[in-house]
Image 1 (cartoon, rainbow, N blue to C red):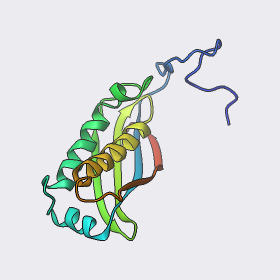
Image 2 (spheres, one colour):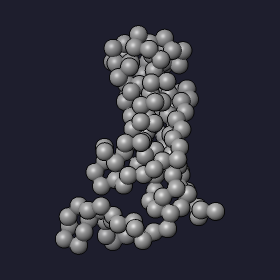
Image 3 (cartoon, rainbow, N blue to C red):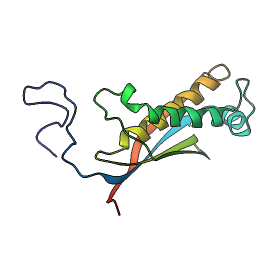
Image 4 (tube, rainbow, N blue to C red):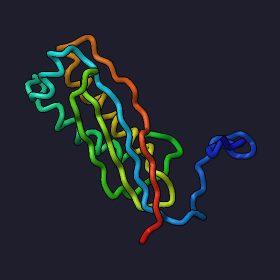
Length: 152
């Protein structure tokens, strides 16, 4: 582990990391999170039967939009020209697993964009189901993959 935090200068002040000296690389990050609710709520989400509409479609678009605006949401995050953001939903025992994959060709990683996409997609599901279920939870948001490769 590094002795110095990358977002703190020599005087202990928050600062944006200078990545100008780094070579651009092809970068990808994948994050996941879980949205849990009563089984009948998950059924309604997966079948598109919510009073507020098609929750998965809205959550997918919300997650993509959030990834694209990550620098406006997280202080000191670099603006990145995202190449792609993909969001998938899978029914699992715990409810719905949300996976977001973000990719970019840049000087810095794209982890925060993938994590933000999962988080906002989950919050959107929460917002669209809160009127019918008081047992909602968002859990286990984490980075599951991070890669980088030279540009060919």
